[in-house]
Length: 225
Image 1: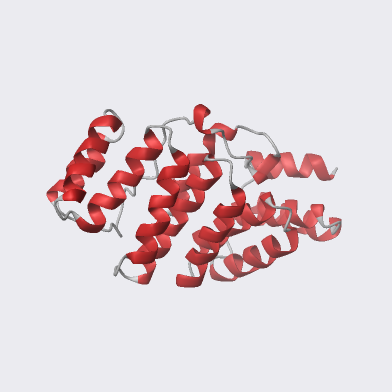
Image 2 (image 1 turned 90 degrees about the vertical axis):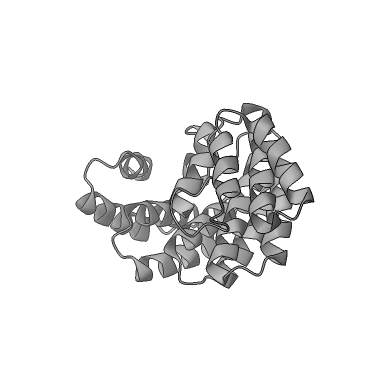
């Protein structure tokens, strides 16, 4: 799921390299963190209907979710309501709703971690990486062996200048999945920020051996050169 959620940051463009300065809420691209695959927090028809409305009718989804939540819609209603708020440009409100849901839900830890991860990205959209870091930390605490969550945590840690911590996250992610080119490139950038240029070059060489056309790896190699 976390890979899909990174699309929330697409509006950041190339600014600040991979540390992805969060787009301001008014520049939100409209790409929502709707999970395309399980786990989902609800499998009811109302949940499916609400999620389906988000892209084309976020105001309608917001009204639907609000009414559904008021009549006992539970986690599914709360989740869709938070997503609708983000779609309407209220990223801070949506992020806070996501965090509340993740804390209060009795869903499995992996699902709660995924919701905290969504909250992280919403906080970045809202321009609050500090709150995003807190949400990302909760996500990896609940599901410490999810490589996607570790990569996301590394991004927000680096956004705050915590490059050493980002490297630790990426070390763990690469132990879980050694073939993640993105994690190699991110670790190279963090190592460069820490002044470890030889280590950064080794990671870029490894990344390009896996994917010679990876644009981010080529960019980072150019920076190193």
